[in-house]
Image (cartoon, rainbow, N blue to C red; front, side, top):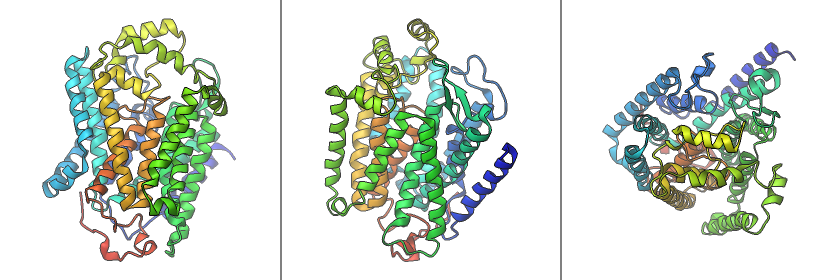
Length: 470
């Protein structure tokens, strides 16, 4: 099949997925398209690249004016939506943001003061507010669970099938070569295989959540089959991309999250949610045993990597001593702005371009010091606690939220995922804030999990909140 015909077939297929997954029984806000568009760009390529503009030499510092204007427009629009909703439902908005996240963002803002590049750091902090604003649009929707479901579908139906098209039929767009080894790697709609891996695995976890709900014993809705076809197709594409991308971290996190979600379907955990703690502790002990008792090489080999995790341990040993201030760090997103850091690393790792630590915890230590790292762990612990409570109220959705929190913990061992505009960070924050909304009563246990849940879970249609939002 030639590229043009394949493109036409895939366009029709994407339209078919949207058609099969349609549901006129729910009405989410049109503002939901803002986070969808936001994730389309963050999960693929900068808008300037899509428009054919070559990135400037200082793109890592200033960024493209096109991209800056695009994110500014989305941020202003999102803040207007959140402010409008706050006028009518201020208590709902306040109940959605947990304290640790609010403290973290305030601390990041304060860290601009001791950054060597305060103007750039402030710009980056303003961009980071966009992550939070987009999440609040989803969580504060009149039908937050339906909004979450549509977010997964609208983003996944576009990014994942187009990635397949690029990889199979447009190799100049969907494939590239590693700068340090020369080996070919697939990138899909992204510019890096790790980004393709992370956006695929976070969307695929959401798809598993949908599929499990549609396969449940209570699922008897007449339109269940077409929803299942659409979601099953998306899940199959996601699994194929994860295997093809060869991103070991993303694949491992997907298996971990999927296994956790499948395990939480067991009656033992449903009847005794405290057993979730035992499951998570066992997973944590297993991962710790691999690292502490010499199993790292075996585990890395099983994932197709070497004992140094593709050179990551060497990078960690080199950059940790470069921390400018162990207590408060270099300032928000400021460590990698320092040219001397790149010069020293270039001497140690010639030919290897580095702009992250490949470890979220070390990255946080470099940027915000021990205080910032402590706040991240506070968010992780609080998010886990809230997601377990959410599991007790809404087991199906709670299992997904726990999977995101646990996956974020593991993902950041070998990748820097606690960064602004990063899919892992966005979906991790989404899980914590969604869990907070559930535990504080913003999202009721009686609210349906998807469009057909008023039939699937035996809930009357009048339980659906039909309040229009902007």
